[in-house]
Image 1 (cartoon, rainbow, N blue to C red):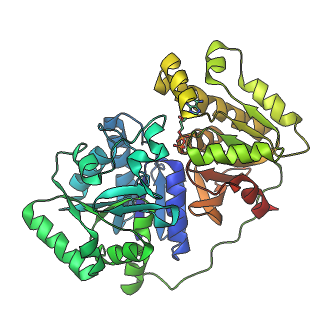
Image 2: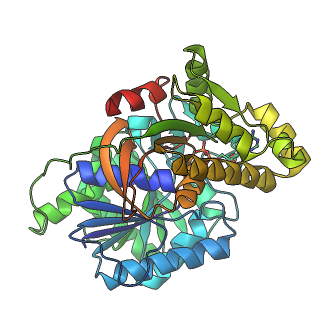
Image 3: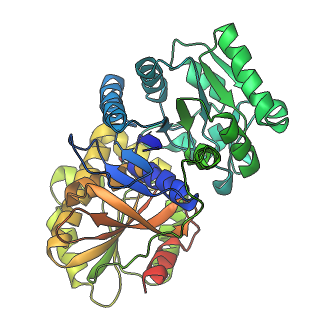
Length: 421
Ligand code: ADP
């Protein structure tokens, strides 16, 4: 195994696995930390998808260290800690605490922080994270139900989460090339800096940074930071030239869409889906809490929709989410919906549904867990960062498109189904 990654949520893991497979690495994505002796086959890259983004920091750390131990038994050469390109976290973590723990466990002198994902509009300039044309703190991430982001400065955000010294390598250095970046690494180590935020505003920047990271044991960032890493292994003669991506055949069966993301992109995609006449079923968390809405209501409704692919969603505008959270508590509201959608997915699976589009990182984690899926093969890409995947290791495979909330164009849902037809 050349590259081993620990991702803090499922859709992020898929996004990274897709990047690595596109760059020519045989990539396997595993849901959770596999049991000892798990067969990664001939994978050159393995992505372990945790659901640690919003856990208490100590639990996120212990899960991440267990994942690291698993990767090390396969003699992994380089480790990536993958988090969201919008740096989803709170002052308690978990990006800082997990990075600290991985650095210590690997005995590495330093690491980088680079959530940039220019293809999806996430860029880092002078240490500030942009989403499209606005700062992170002005983007819809300020209203995220679990990890509202109200600062955009990555040095400040990271420093609030770690006791290790944090500094910046800015774009002026990145533009001078990988040798200049390596020199900046060396200077930082002498100065005692352990964590370096690195600017990147385009894929070329990420490839340059990737080249500079050839000998760095721990890399942290969004999926973009992986763009330039496979080429290092190719240069070192341990990775073959590009291969074609594996063929993909979705299992026959009925299809459904489940959305628990309240991100702006998902809400727009849902509006477009409603507008084109798709049958929809809205889940209201307060109704779940009061017992007036049960998974059976949604399951029976979906089973009855023979003419079209139905959409079940809980997605709501920020003011509605706030109102709900004030009544139920943030975590309870989230957990209620995640469990509900997981129950719905499991029941539909047993009633002949085998193709699922799921919107939302946490939501996807809950659905995959409920379906008992433990590993995914990466298939064709629907939109940047979102491929169709096929479960493997299960008696009856399912096709899953797991979409991080803010990903995808407005017609994402119809695009996904068109790719399968
Ligand atoms: P994203 O990828 O957009 O961040 P996630 O699924 O990761 O989406 O997170 C959305 C969270 O919001 C989940 O925990 C989900 O259960 C919760 N949620 C969904 N709908 C509502 C709602 N109407 N009110 C409150 N919380 C909600």
